[in-house]
Length: 164
Image 1: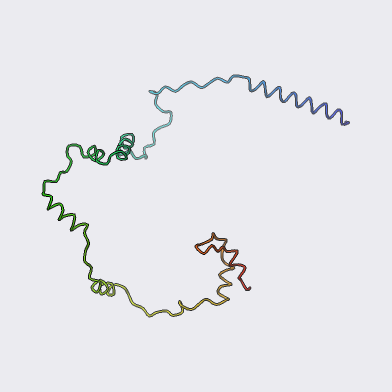
Image 2: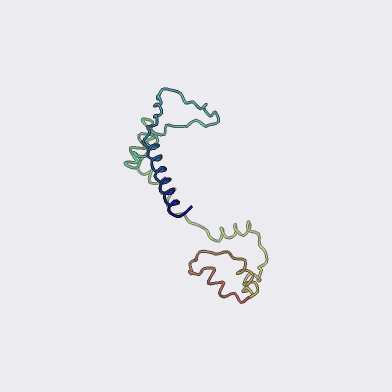
């Protein structure tokens, strides 16, 4: 087959493919019937599902009310059973001062108590010695690529220091 025959067959194939695509896309497919809202679901209900403890729309409404006014939201939650305070202003001031006021702390007693609960051991001085070049080399070879830390150094920077 020469090139002109090949070109003619290719052109014919392209024209036939475009015509077929236009024909298929212009066909109207039947739309599925609308579901009736009162019709039960075809799937059986899942019995393992935990029932909702509250109404989600009521929770959404209460969250919106809380953003607007915390007092109104509290009134809505407590209703007429809102706990009131029947005491005096001095009693309320004393309560809040004792609860949220500054407190004295006996540091000597605190350290004494901590010492009795914390086990004591001899200091391991090997933890304070700097690492050897061999230890650094082993650690650098085992590191994966890392993001820069506060010092802005990446693994690639540290790898350049590896003496091997």
